[in-house]
Amino acid sequence: DGDASVMRLLRRNVEKNPGRGGLRAESLLWGAENPLGKLGLQKPPDLLLAADVIYASAKESLTKQLLDTMLALSHEDTVLIISNVRRFPEGHPKGEGKFFAASDRLFHRATLPQSSLHPDFQRSGVGSCAVHLLRRKAATESATES
Image 1 (spheres, one colour):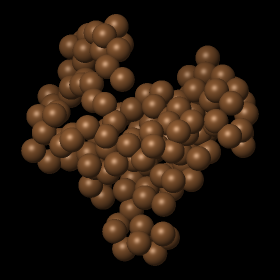
Image 2: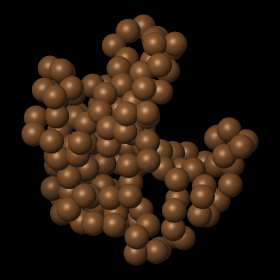
Image 3: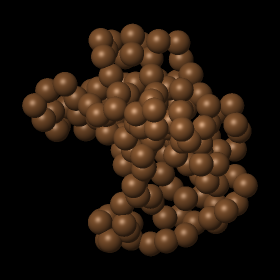
C-alpha cells in the first residue's frame, strides 16, 4: 500500500541483509498499469514476497486487482510467498477464503504448518499468522479449472 514507515523499515532491512544482490523493497499498488515497468523490471522475478495483502477478500474488485498484479509479476517458476494475519474465523465472509478460492484457480498453493513458524507465532485461529507458498499454474491447468 506504500505506507511510508513500512517502506522505510523494509528498505533498511534490505540494506542490512543485501544477500547476493538484486534484492529490493518497492511499493506497488494493485492493478497498476505495467507493474513490471513500474518496478523497473524487464521480466518477472523468481521470488515475490507480500505481507498482509489478503484483506482483498472484502471486495471482489480488490481480489481481481491483486490477482492481476500477481499474474503480471510472475511466471511459472516464480515462487510467491504471501503472509497474512487471520483477522476473521475460517469461513467468515470477510476472511481470506474468497481470495484463496480465486487464487487457487491460477496458482498452486501450500500453507506452511504452524510448527515451521517462530514459536512466538505458532497459534491458530483469529490473530494467527499464515504463510502461503504459491506457484503459477501452467496456462493449460488454469484453463481446465475455469
